[in-house]
Each structure stands twice: as structure tokens, then as C-alpha cells.
Image (cartoon, rainbow, N blue to C red):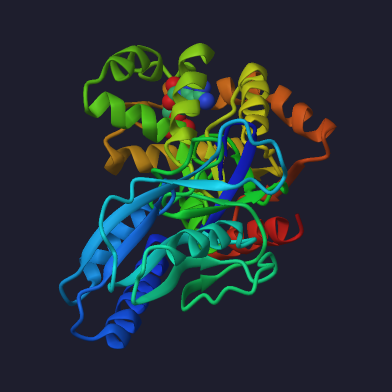
Length: 369
Ligand code: AMP
């Protein structure tokens, strides 16, 4: 989901579906026109992307030009009369194909027909990438249609919302509902969050963000953030909230089209939980559930020390550091159980059993959300 000005938009038509629709238009039009050299006329601003991609796919020689329609200044009637900017070419006797990004009510089309009537063209054809049949109120013929879409506001691929969104390669549709699934996967170190997150992310098409993994990535790449985090992590202490929250916000922002997130290792403090709620709210979304894997301490110590033998993680190698992480977890995170319980979003799941059994227990909770 993305936000442009005050509105939210969800992914609607992928770049590859747009590409297919444009190929189809190019084939149809070239079959109809044959060897004659047509003049393709794009209507700015919205059509700049479609025209550019279309002419690259058009299999025969063609000419291309752009025009812009603008309201007469000072005209205040609801039926604005449009004037034309930019047509410098003589189109007498030519086959002209107007290429529109979108046709909805058909008002622009009305003006196009009126304007081209005086140009002495041999034939005038209209092609549009997107067409909203429910919104179209005119009788003018539309010769070529790429994709029919419902009557909902869209942005991207040349189309804007108050100036923004034209640069996006896919098309997004306006949305008011929150359709994301955002899960906080909770549990002490060694509870199996990472393993389970891997299964759940593919099953539910979610983006998995493990703050521990992001910190470790930064440590390995010797970034400033990594150097800062390392001093805390090596002792099994928590990295300060300010640093962690900033990093988490940046990770979420990297995934603008996500259908939802699995947060693993975050939040770990009350301040982080509040920051996460704020962040989700800014995306017109919310946390759906905190699901906690419950595992007995002695099993955890055993699992972590075993992992330390192969993982190379310094904080898994030493029993006292392992115990400190578990203690830190319970001391600092009890408050989170209360935080999500008070919102009716806390779900405890038995974390002892086979991987498949545990995945199934987690899926049952998510399916019921
Ligand atoms: P994990 O891989 O989740 O066990 O995290 C390993 C270490 O990374 C923790 O012991 C902390 O030092 C640090 N860390 C990970 N997530 C957080 C967080 N949400 N807040 C503070 N520190 C964190």
C-alpha cells in the first residue's frame, strides 16, 4: 500500500499486465493500419508512459507527437471548453491514432473529436490503455481498448493524484480499507520465530522483518548502525529504542507494496509497541495480532547452545549470555503481553513440537483473524 497526499492506494495492475495490454494494442493497430505510416498522438500529461512503451512495440514505421488540452482561462462553466496546445504538424490526409492513458467519462474525447474535425485527417482512431465502462457517458467510438477497469480512482503509469504518482511503473487503485495482515511474532530467543516466520511469509505472502537479522546484517557490513548495535548485542542487551525504532521504520518503508508484515524480534519494549502502532496507523493499517510461541526456559537454553555450535553467533555460544537474553526477554517484554492483551490481540501458541505442528497452530490463529 502507498500513500499519496492524504489518500491510500493498493497495487492493482502489475507492470507485466500493462506490458501485455500494450503489446496487444500495438499488434491490433498495426494489423488494421498496415503499411501506411500513422501519426500517433499522445494526450499529455498522463499518456507519456503509455505512448513511449507503445511506439517501442509498434512493429512498423510511425510518427509520434504529443498535444495537451487546457481549459480556457477565465471560463467558469461546468462544461469547460478545452483548447489545444502543441499541435504544430499538418495532419491533412493522415491516419491519426490518438493514444490515451485512460478514458473515463469521455469528456476529453469529446474535445479531441471537436479539435480534429478541423484538421482534415484521413481517419481518426482512438486507442486507450485503460477504459472505465461504468463511467463512460458519451457515444464517441473508442477503437482500441487495452484493459477495462472498474470505476475507481487509479494512479501510476503516467496517471497522477494531484501531481503525484505518475512515475510509478505499476497501477494502484484507491483504497479505504485496511487489507494488510500484520503479525507480531513473539517469543523468547530460541523459540523458533525465524523458522516459523519463513513458512508463514510464503504461505500468507508477507514480508518478514527480523530486527535481529537486520542488526546482524549491519554488523557484517560494518555500517555505523552495526557498530552501534554490536556493543549491546554482544552482551545480550537490547539496542536502545531510538535506534531500533528508526531502523524498523526504514525497513517497513522499503516494502511499500507489502500485503502485510511479520515482525520478528520487534517490538521488545512498550515504547517500540507504541511506535509500531503509530507507524501502522500512518499506513492506514494496524497490527492484527501478537502471536507468542511459548517454550520452557530449559528447552530454550538447550536449543540456543546447540544453535551456537553452528550459527557462529557470539550471543548463542555462552550459557550465561543465553540466560541473560532469556531473562531480558521476560523482564522487558512482559509489558508487551499486557499491551496486546488489552487490545484483545494476544494469542499464545505452544512452541514445543515438530516444525509442521507449530506452523499449523500458528496458521489456525492467522486464519481466524
Ligand atoms: P534476536 O535475533 O531477535 O534474538 O536479536 C538479537 C539481538 O539484537 C538482541 O539481543 C538485541 O541486542 C538486538 N535486538 C533485536 N531486536 C531488537 C529490538 N526490537 N530492540 C532492541 N534490541 C534488539
